[in-house]
Length: 254
Image (cartoon, rainbow, N blue to C red):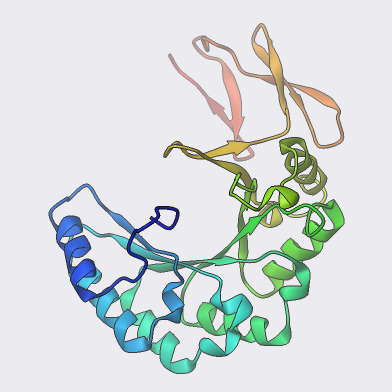
């Protein structure tokens, strides 16, 4: 809608009512995301109204908010806002971070206030040339996020949006960054590198090549250091074959 000339850019109660009616009439909808324009730029009473209406729909299991506000306007995260939000659990929040310089004391306080309200926080970061396309920069960002209780969630390939070509990197750059994180820091700090496929294709995850192939009843794997390992993985496990699970020896019976 944003890119549609002549489209409506201001949402009002009448439009929201239509969306709420649609959600209520479709029991297959279990997850609702409030996203851009930024939901946290709404006044508390308007956001409260919207969340309360969604929470009344029995088949909506959980709600999400996508926002940049805690990063650029941390003073918006007031105690009054968090008191209101905690009434609508399970409620999750995805926050847009770009660079470790955004991790100011004020942003830290805002995120901790949200986390203390029981809201799980995840980060969404767009890979931008000349901004965060170095392994060390990304490592500082993800480490800083964990310290303020935000889980690095997505690293997005920059979409081919008009006017953004100078920010776009090759896909190989994103894979290089993931390879520079995986194995060199905690797994909690490694986001999923994704491309948001055009035409409604959804988010497609990309990974460095860790699965080399199969040789008989073993798969060949490559770790973060480039070393290869063989892992037993029979295509047709035989009767009485033993294996290990959780550190305890178990017997698999056909």
